[in-house]
Structure formats: structure tokens, C-alpha cells
Image (cartoon, rainbow over all chains, first blue to last red; front, side, top):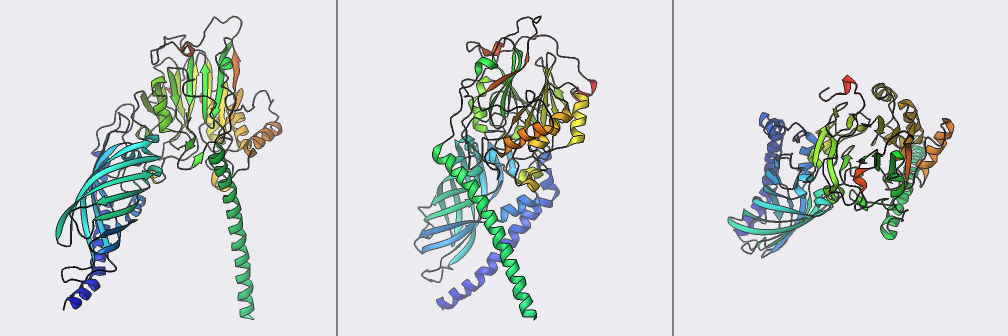
Length: 217
Length: 356
């Protein structure tokens, strides 16, 4: 019975993933084309006489870049797993940008603002798959879930463009239970590539998750 | 018969693909080997900064080439630093081949910084942080202040043919032909983030081109507004791959044409022999420039290259001129003090005023 349920769960999983991806695409499309998305730049503080406020908009190029997942590997009570992670950043505050420029970013966060010193709130759709697992009735073997967290970046070299680091914390519901994770990361090339390690003492299956971060804005 | 033809086509296609692959690989190897040399050997030392020439008492207009697009210009008692990049690396991987011709400590205080655009080899966040205390004001193209770090100096954005003159000299942003942004995709948001500049002070005029492709009609417009440019600081590279570079980078020949179109008295070539940012051969930029000077029959005393750290006096004081030594040259002077106003700037054209 448990075997049958497990197989059912496994065969259903790709559909769940597809649905989640469709939802992600729809959300990003909404962000890209909706009037509220276009309001991103108009809601910024009015420009000073000397400088123009940045007009970062979720364009098609940005939209495509956000679909690129960051691969990850996880380890815990169910053995090793591989996974994929995306990130949405509803809001970020940077203390590293020039004083006449708004420190707030909504949705689109430029590398200068993020890597030069910032704090951000994020939502990460994350998919993990355990190739070998115990197959207990309550255990599906793969899952798409959301991770909600906050993260602070600190520049290390060339105002963070060449090298920066981050610390953060997140919560997520995985396999029916909520867990907390603590995270550290290091990034290079304007934050385009990086490595994040999440440690979750309270989570059995996802005790340690290492992510090769690929992110553009 | 059809099979034989298919085999011939496949063979030809394979040969073409192999040739292309070998070409790309050899070019890539050349670029990589130059980069690796820069990583392993470090930048080649250059001469000591020629401060004696820069600060010479009989100089009215002098310039010191620091390297790549970084040039320190002295106009009487004022100093202008264009595109300051003093670090050993730009972008993610491009290492400096030749050491910077001047250190941050050697720079005079109360500098006016001109940033032509936000690409890594022209806008260095580390350098701006390093020289923060010595900078009085920076001018950047419209939409570029968002790339600046949280420095303490004042920064102002200037749009095409907009001018600012409240420091006693006049800086006008002039359009050039290049590309904006810093990280690639941001070019879609920040289309106008590149410019050249014209500085006018005490009857002297200097044109700084930043990065630019050739545009004869544009240079005529610039010349109409600034008919007596004393010194044109122009890039002469990168050259290759030419079809890709042509729209945004002049080579030596086009740079000399630009110099002639602008009707400038002197030309200082820059943007070469410092970083690997193209597939050019070593020295190719300078060879083309020198050949172009010969072909265009320009007197070699009007257009010639300096080495990193070398300075040259372009306009000397007349015997009748009073003393007008650079106030900022004194290391004891406190930085960022408001330099006293000197002679009134030369009469401005109405169409270049602020808010034009």
C-alpha cells in the first residue's frame, strides 16, 4: 500500500512541479506586464535636481533571467538530494548606494545596490528530489516548497562587485512541518555567481543545503 | 549521386566549422594567454608620475596619462580627472597589463572627476572610494549616479549639451556614440548612460571623448558649439573584432579623423595598452594611430601618445601672463576647500547653458 502510494506520489510530483512553474511564470509575467509593475519606477522618491532615480523595471530580459534556477544539493535524514531554487525579492534596502539615490528596491535589485551592502526579504520557490529514500507513507521523495527569508549582504572587495558575503535566515514548510534555516553565502562577479550554505538543525531531510547561486538582478 | 553531393556538402560544412572553431580557439587562446601573463607576472612597472611637468610653472594646459582612459588634466589652477581607474583589475577578470601611472596618494586634492560611462574600465567603485577625500565634485552621464558607491563627494548628472559652471569653470556633456549600462541587461533601462565632456576654463577648452565610435556629423555639431578645442583626449582602441567594435569604438584611423573633424589643436590618445578588452595584438592600437597620423599629414607634434605616468604641456603661459600656479598641487592644502574664483570663464554660447 505504502509502495503504491509512494509511486502515485512520485508520478504526481512532476505535475506539481509543472503547476508550480506555471504559477511562477504567471507571477513573473504579471510583474512584468501589469500596471502595478510599471509603477515600480513611479513610486520611487522624486528625483533630485542633480540625479535621476534608477528606473529598474522587470523587462523581458530580466524576466528570462529570473527563470534560470540555481542548482543545489541537500543532505539529511533521507540521504542526499538535488534541487533547484529560484528567488523573488519583493523588497531590498541598500546602504551602499550613493546618497542621492533611493536605497529601496522593489522586485528588481541591481548588483550595485545588493552587493555593496543591503538587506533583502525574499521568497524562494525550491524543488528538491531525493533519488533514494525510505519510502514511508508520509514521505513523497520530492517536493516543491517556498522558503521565506531575509538576508544581509556585505561587500568584501571593490564594493562587493568582485567579492561579497551574506548571512541570513529563513523558514519553510517541508514534508508537512515547518523548519528554520540559517544561511551564509559568498558571491563574485557582481553577485552573478555565488555559493550559499543553509543549515537547518530542526529539519531532518534538509539539514544542510548547498546552493550554487546564479542570479542576474 | 545525391549521396555523394550530401557527403561533399557535409565535408565542406565540417571544414568551415573546423576553421571557425580553430579561429575562435586561437583568438581565445591569445586573449587568455595575455590575461594569464597579467595574472602571473603582475602589471609591468611604468615610469614615475611626471608631476614636475604637470605642475610646471609655465604650464597652462597639461595632462598626465595615468593609463587606459584615466587622464589627469591641469587647466591653470584646476585639475580634472577623467575616468579614474587605479586598481589592478576591472570587471571580473581583466587584469592591468601596465601599472597605473599615478597613485591615489599622488593625486592633487579638490579634483573634479569626469566619468564618461559606467563600464568597468571607466567607473571603478574601488577607485572612487579610494580618492573620495580628494574629490570635490564628479560629473556623470544621466542615469549613472545609481552606479556610484556611497562616497561623500557631490555628484551631478549631465545630459547631452547640458552644462554646469557653478565652480568657476564650465563642464558640458557632449554626446558620443557608445553603449550604456554596466551589467549588460541594465542597458535596456539606462540607455543614455554614456557621454563625452568639454571643459572650458580661462579660455582653454578640452574635449574628453570617453569611449566612442566614429560619427562625423556629431563631431561637426560639437565643433560648431566648441570651435576652438585646445586638446582632444580620444580613444584609439579597442579595434577587434571590428564589425562588433566599429559602432562603439574608434580605431586609430577614426580617432585621427575625429581629431580633425573637431578641429582640435592637440590630441592625446588613450584607451589602449592597459587592459585586455579585445582581441587586438599587442601594440596594434598605437601602430594604427601612428600610421593614421602619418596618412592624415598631421604634424607629429600635435598628435602623439604618452606612456603611462608621462605628462605633457600643451599650452604654455605667455610671458605677459601673471603667475597662476595650481593651488591644489600643494599637499598641505586642505582638500575640498572651495577654490577661489579666478578670471571669469570665457563667454558662453546661449545654447549650451544649463537647462538647454
